[in-house]
Length: 434
Image 1 (spheres, rainbow, N blue to C red):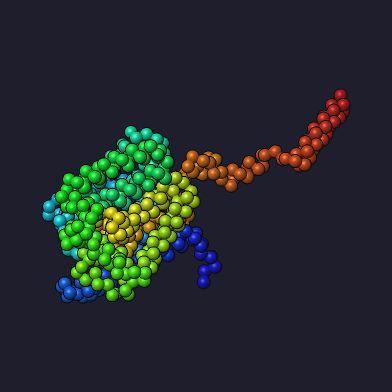
Image 2: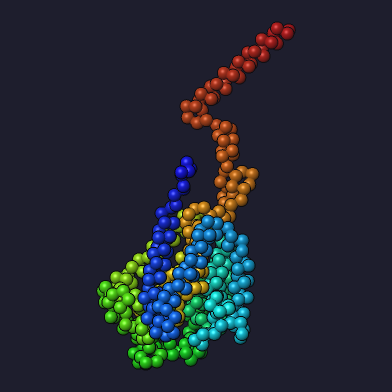
């Protein structure tokens, strides 16, 4: 056994790690429950097909999470511009026929065979990292709309346009909402935030009304029962599942709606399956776990040593909570269907790996081992514009500082005695020489 004791992590680190692992375990159980029947009846590939894929992506994501938890902050701060450029290139490539993979009327994936990547998932994390870097380096930019627009809002608008063109309005909304929360944390003025929010709502309304299928979803959200067999089918089936679950559910694996009634039961609508099989208790458990992430993540961001880490922690928490909130609102019938998965729980390889990598960055901030924005100067370490004096400088200062109190009086008296002694000695030498 090593004589050196392992350094204990702060409580925020432990809470974040525990909540994340619990959500992944919960997700593995529910993905199997939601997909086993339809997977077996559809093509006979086996009831655990989606579970195997979920576990594989979870392993990749956990490896990325623990790597980012060690030294991720320093790495992403250095490579954020490159990551942003790569995400834009992939967003453009996915729109090219023959390169982008089309499914259910949307071209959102790129890859070969079963190995596929959803560029919009990478892009939303890259946008958060870019916004954090800009807001940390230029804290005064939040005071003026012109400095805020260029380059931050211009880059966000360009990425959102490419994501909406896939089409994937839900991911664009998540990225925009997370950046808005970052602006609040960075100290943007309320009137400026209200202006940006108004412009955003107007643009989202225009985008929703222009496309016929989005307009149908909007009308189905307002009254899903008016067209329960077509545009309102998914919302109605989700509400039936939640109503059937009651307080404690019908039992794990006993859902009826997941078998060819509830579309995308193992991805976007997995919360409805949780509500039917585990009831309100299961849904509250999920909410508590996300609440733990919010509490511990924001505390870690508040305790971070510099502005970059504070904003980074806030941005990652905002990204996770915005996505979870939109999924909850959609399943509960409080928002139109947008196709947004539940973080860490829904089946989805790119989303799971990217969010686990982001959680690794949050763990790095919470651990207190991340170092950013520190430079060594002649008087010690300079951090956020303040000088943290080194031990050598402090020792020199103590040696040269004047004593106080009784020691000061003794110091003055001893000084006088020394001066008188030196004066009498000088006079004796002069008489002896004369």
